[in-house]
Amino acid sequence: MKNKKKYSNYISISESRKIIRYNIRQMKHYEKLKRRKLDKSEYTVAMRDEGNLIEIDGLKTCFFTDAGTVMSVNGVSFDIPKNKIVGVVGESGCGKSVTSLSIMQLVQSPQGQITEGQIRYNSEELGYDEEGKKLAYDISKMPTKDMYNIRGKDITMIFQEPMTSLNPVFTIGYQLDEVTFLHRPSLPKAEVKEYSIEMLKKVGISMPEHTYKCYPHELSGGMRQRVMIAMALAGDPKLIIADEPTTALDVTIQAQILELLRELQKKQGCSIMLITHDLGVIAEMADVVVVMYAGKVIEKGTAQEIFHNPMHPYTIGLQKSKPLITSDENSPLYSIPGQVPNPINLPNHCYFKNRCSRCTEKCGGEYPREIKVSETHSVSCWLYDNGESADGGER
Ligand SMILES: Nc1ncnc2c1ncn2[C@@H]1O[C@H](COP(=O)(O)OP(=O)(O)OP(=O)(O)O)[C@@H](O)[C@H]1O
Ligand SMILES: [Mg+2]
Image (cartoon, rainbow, N blue to C red; front, side, top):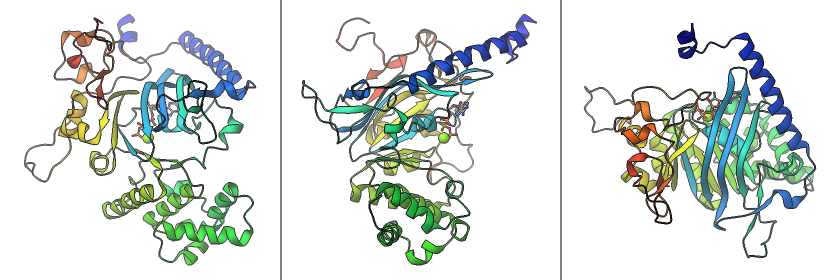
């Protein structure tokens, strides 16, 4: 029975009660922290680099579920520079969406909570501290009321399935006007309509006046996604989070939407966090690439570094599993063997250990730290850890 318990996901009634009691305690604790009245100085922090729009530092987001605590985002750190496209890749369930929802403060609460870390948003409203460092809002601690001024305006999101994001009982025009009105409350009604039609024109819809009067079901998938992009652009955003924006579209429309996003990014001078499974999309679009695995960033660097010099065995495996025009059509496509570890009981060693073909003795030890390969490229793998600490001494 003991062995059965060890190898199965069986939870006894007493364990289940214990988990529920623990969850209630934790949820109450974090919800209380959120309701606390905070002074602005308590969620204003200094940026590390003024050139970044967002700096995510040691972010941990978890879900308190009946089966235990799911560590969806487990100490993620990366930057989103101004006017750049950051591509986030990783297999299903590695925490890409939860990271983006954390930036928007949209994690499903009370079970989902940001438990640690900072999300620094370089807002133009804030000045500099006494040491001359640019001040930023820490979104992880920011009160919801203040977040309303940023969410949807400075930071917007384009979701995967446009049909589920648009309301089927209202016209496109009504829904666009609502967003425009929210961001520009002083605009007269006639001008709101004009602005909405202008937005539809901007995203390449050829008959904007006609589309304005249409209901979502009257439009094709590509047009609906264009409307979603128009909505995202209505507030003049600094950051657009695109969570798999083209997965529901066919390949030709996918190319058009990506081209549109890139064009708008250049024209508007904003940043994009592009989440996708598709390495081809990342290669074409991104300036910076972040590779995630089981809630952690395992490698990050410029697109050039990640595609021409991938270092982590997982990144190398991901690239090998991509079909190429030159590959032999008779040989089976490479796939990384094994499965991602259970996010409830994560091991203490490297999470990729059991799937890695280059695993060494060291990999059974503690989780590998981040090794800086160049100014922009870093990897978390024991293969590249020669024991030297960042300051040159022994680890
Ligand atoms: N509301 C929730 N309650 C419990 N667990 C959740 C919830 N939302 C996400 N998770 C868990 O968090 C982990 C990360 O999920 P996430 O949606 O971020 O994955 P993803 O990388 O976006 O995957 P995909 O590529 O399939 O969209 C998963 O293990 C998932 O089961
Ligand atoms: Mg997702």
